[in-house]
Amino acid sequence: MDALRKQASKLREQVAKQQQAVIKQFGGTGYDSSDVMVIDEVEMHRHQQLDKLYRSTRSGRDFQKEVVKAAEAFTAIGYKHIETGIKLSEDCCRYGAENINDNVLAKAASIYGDARKHVEKEQEDFNKLLSSQVLDPLRAMIAGPPLEDARHLAQRYSRMRQEAEAQAAEVSRRQVRVREAPTPENVAKLHAAEAKMQEQKANMAVLGKEASAALAAVEAQQQRLTFQRLVSMVEGEKTYHLRIAAILGEVEAEMVVEKQRKDSAPPIISSENGTEKTTYFLAEVSPSGWSEGECRGKAGWFPSTFVEKRQKIPTSDIAGEVY
Image 1 (cartoon, rainbow, N blue to C red):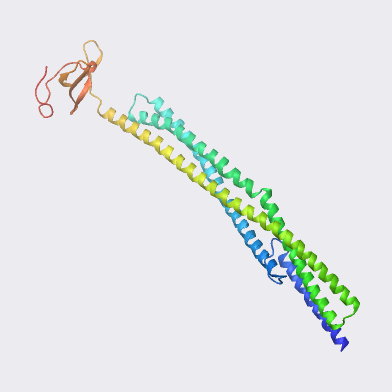
Image 2: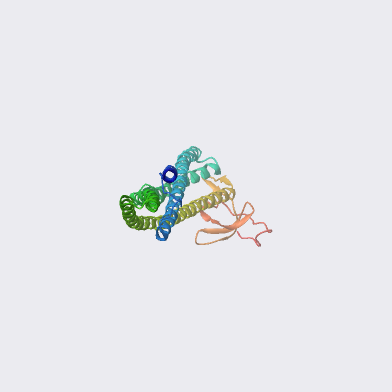
């Protein structure tokens, strides 16, 4: 009978050792979220809280990395945009300068070339904003000591928890031996195992509170900082597009005005003294230096200094004759 008891005790010890080996193998890195053995209800609650915080901070860090990756891509595209825009600006200005008296296209090219410089300046400012307001703060937090320190505390708690689970198994074995053979030696070993177990539980409680507080602080900082950086990125991008739209709106207006001015320019004739004057059909001459009349089928007020002679106005647009 004693031989059977000893064999059964050895078998239980082997099974317990195998269980602990499996726990260490699959829970040795990172935070161990297994619930193989729960020491008590308080420890169970602490363990679940740490597991939740560990997962949350890891998810927050991963999201921050994705935002950084996107901002880096925006910046790289922005620099390529600046390079291409500057080249286009130079080409437009060159064409406008070389064909200044040619046609309306040359004037439009000059206008757009000048404006393009302002567009690229806005792009450069947006790149600087992404770097200072988004990339730098997020990179600093991702690799910062608070997150790493908090995660190390959680990992230490996880290892201590595994040790406590192994010690709890040892206490159970000692209790079985005492029941089988309540010798003074077995009783002393049981008391020593229980004392060690109590010490580990106390250390776990202290470390668990410290790790929970550290992870909770990091989680709150992650949420707050990431939200602020997202808002900064949205505001910066909004301002960038509004300014670009304003610049391009002015360019478009200047181009349209230039085209209309070119289309409405009066025909040029040579006067007797060799200077060039413009022919208008006049209805009224104002002392202010403007003359009302018609040119190329359009009625309106025209500068009197460009008038060479007065002619009869067609009755289709302006009634009466003025000489």
